[in-house]
Length: 313
Image (cartoon, rainbow, N blue to C red; front, side):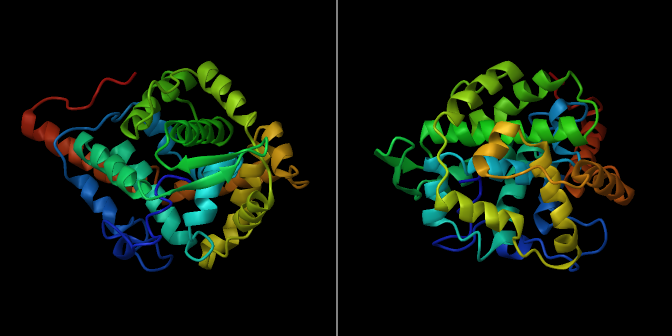
């Protein structure tokens, strides 16, 4: 039940997702999806801004690993997995589902406050239709809703862990340290309706330990993991994907790997992933989303004659 996962299910695309969708080979080198152009507009620097821990972590190529890591981790909660199984068309349209999640993350990180708030509200509306029942780890039947506070918290914690964990392995320094990222990214959780999200690494890990006690691995999980291993992504991206997937698996907490039935690759997956992510920096140190956000902030500063960026935590 990753954020944006219902964007293309049962009711069609919203917010122009069909036109904005990522299509390898259909854009000039260095250009982002069409929706990144919206990040040029806005009235402020957003909730984070240049110099923040969030820009350092989310703007890193390590987020490619983090996305896979987050999806693998999220499959372990039976309520979240039921929502994916019952409502998502991830196997039929993996790029569409990916685009919805990437769009939410980038807009929350690099958009102005109005755009970030609107992105969260849009996802909340989409999640409103996602509900059903699932069998928990004890065998009891329980209702689920994508906007259930407990599941929202699980998804937020899983994303936070994945972003931070992947960056600590494959990224660089974090301004203010890991706690600064957890504290800042808690704002993304609050926008999605999470009450009092964790603001330290210790609090995050304690919550994740509690969630892992609810983990359940069944055929739905095994099917999702098989898909994530070989999603059928086309083009050059599809050729490079196995390296990133292996890096994500190798970087996982050993407890999570064991629950998912995954083994750490025998070959030097971490080294290969670092080399691949380092190679991506040859295309430029900033993503199209970050470049557009910097252009917006520079325009605002030129207009006001002063800094518009929020003070990093």
